[in-house]
Length: 454
Length: 168
Image (cartoon, rainbow over all chains, first blue to last red; front, side):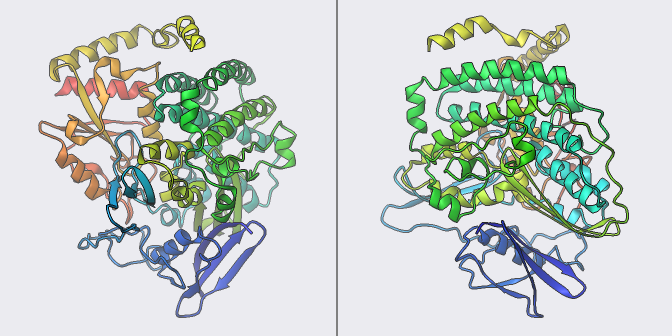
């Protein structure tokens, strides 16, 4: 059974922990001692959720084999900001530096390599810690949350409309994924069905966002294998796609685009774009798959087996490239509009590259069939109360949103970014590869830091 | 590879076309001169993300695509702060990033400048100041110039760099 999320709510009666699986949600009220049992033995991906539960709420996890702080880095004072009595505007004072014990492998000649948080390029901050035997990676630890902005807490007390610009910017390159899911929540909260036309408009922009994302990766993955010409070509296509986004939404990333009333998309502009890009990417495919030295770098590099992809509850391209047919768009609505699940069972960089390329063509076909969408005004949720959840399949994978409202105001906001799952599986791809292949493997997964750190 | 060279010849230089009109040409010429005069031919930028949504980084990456091709003007993003003249700072400056940002700034050899990129570091973005956020950046670093936008477009970044070069 697939683990999707594990998080807590605080209400008058105390704390409650929700564990969301693909087929059910388990809820558990905590006793006064505020302890839970770890489920990390069965679901390794629960580790970060449980470490976060402790940092956010002070919940103790029995049976956890990793109880290091997750969000709270070396200089954090001891506090649990998601508790209701904690004021979001508190100014923290830096505490004395408390070293973080990294996971390392010991042995003769084994050494550690520390990378980040500031990397040698235009990339988001995060830390990678390697245990090396010469060039060979024995183990790698991913340590993140440098970008932890406290957004879950920031959103409490806001209406959905007030929250919109913030949710829209949790992760810039996944803005549509977040907005698409938030819009579902707004309709559910207003107890109003979201029409196919309304959903279609969001789906169109979500496919465009996926195309931009995949194009960027299709350039950067070969670039990290030393083939810069692919980046030059694909980055031009990504730029053109971003300009289409600006033409359709008035913004190059489509921030706030799914909030307002929209009569419809410029169908002719979309059709021309689709036609041109399809031609161009057919040429790209023929070109790139005919370069043996490049494919040699991709093949068998950074393998994630299907067994481990399932065990670690991975999502998105990472899961699909390891043979797991998991895609939130796999429903009647999307199938009727040209969707088909793309999988590859090799699990290596080549598979992740291929899945992206094939998904791009699927997205282009879907865009042509999503041209009749239009957006109604956002439904009134000013007196909505209750708990609502929504999913969307962004370029990075399945996003899960949970919003609890009380008289139209958010009392709990929880987002599980797809990258939160996939980052925890990244280290599985390293053993057997040399450290020079790390950037290539990492890029082939292309995970988000901003969405993960929140 | 023959396909590639055919395509290369067919495509030509794309930087000259579409909205890249005379205005951008003049702007680029001005920028190239400013870089030559003030930084002996090259301006080295160390981009540091202190807690952004990643859109600012995406736009900085876009500066390298053939439509903008920033590097041909002698402006390059460098890997180490020790190679840099300028720190281009995006993001809201999180509690977790602040010490690392200050560390990176300390590593840049003088003379050095900080340019804030986007609405986040000046706390004009929708993110509210809270416990995990140490912005605005001006409380921690001397800011020489600011490029507004959420995110600033590649054009706006080039224009912002030009204005900065005109100022110092």
